[in-house]
Length: 302
Image (cartoon, rainbow, N blue to C red):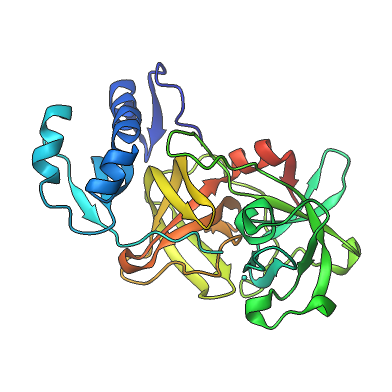
């Protein structure tokens, strides 16, 4: 899934086309509203696009925002109250950093690089640099928050996606690879879902059904409703992510803290994304598109 070329004639979304002008406005509005001024004064945390148009996401009631937006827009844009967004640092199985902040999250699935070396996929803020780890530091399963200890070590932090902590950056992936101590000991099946991924889906359409299995909320289902640019708070600072998958649990929480690193599957059990954040109060979850995860980390889902 790619929405990055503002000069392109448009991208297919739910069988329709979002004109380049609409996508360009989404990108410009995201750049404008996620700067420090709007982020701080009006609690704007994201800008989303769907077949119905643009939506501004706010953490709390933003009095005066509609009036302030008028100089930027030719017509009113819906404002959705989503509550706090969390970097939801288990696909089933809990994993976590053995050093640094000792955060806990989810082992998503198994992947391999071009040399057929096998790794575990999770989020960088769960087992990598944003968790305070250095390359070679231990990874536990389960993570510390779920009872893990040094005796639970399954491997080490191999490499991550190098998230840039800046509201002016354009991150796409919060991902990390776990180098297993014993690669053959780990199954391709995802706990709670009971099957291994059946490939990947790089071309989601709006309205597609999605599900995941995480250490905190277990198996949950939702719908792909937004392409979204948003600011994500981490312990070390705030990072902006562009063109992420926005998933609505439709009245049921899709994810909470501890679910980060779970892979998001479509109804055919193909991996569509890597869950890295959520706004539980509004039932929303956010995932990195799997095509970006594969490209940035140099891996393929197996």
